[in-house]
Image 1 (cartoon, rainbow, N blue to C red):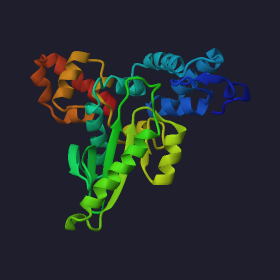
Image 2: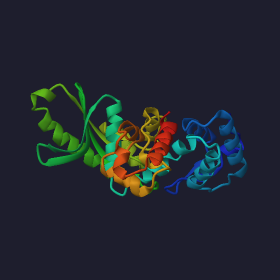
Image 3: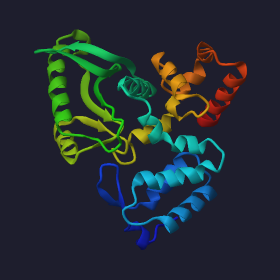
Image 4: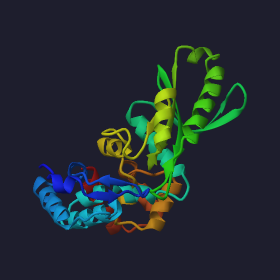
Length: 283
């Protein structure tokens, strides 16, 4: 499907207030990644193109698309609601750190969350430390409940100096002599242009909701099926918070730990309903 020139130049307002041209291909990818059928994608795109107007917010646009997708009555509308589900992981950033830890585990790393590490000058606490035989990734997580927030350049500057301080000490240890160290800033929102420019210059890795293009956090969550439990509709927010307090942040973890739902005093009927929803989302 190809966007016509008229629609591709309609300005839409992002969460941070900036305007960008409407990208029908981006909308199509989001729907397809959520598992929507091709015919459904075509119908939704046609509706959006006939309805869209200059200055409409991305939030309103995607809410309309989600409402249309929900009528399909499949798990795709739950997966499409991923951005909202991420914003419901708060209010603290710890559940987000756990989710990022799970992401590195999928890549084969041993992971620790909330690690105190000695630097040459001071002691540091890293949100996530992921290691394997050859490398260690030191991660600062920046979780925001407002999608309009972005990570300023001060954060990668800060992380760069902290990682350098840690590396000096860690390389003195024999087991880390030949290990490659990398600093990361990971957020559920976006980065300022200065953040991106500084990271490219200083070799600090950035991972945001849609950054880097085609390989952002959203795409990685979809790739590894790491949907947060906040996408579920069959359990309440209070029940979700209880699960998060027990360290369960992804649907995959919830499905694997079959007895965890018993701790919430669910009836057998509700447990079956929740498990069916998990199977629909995860496949």
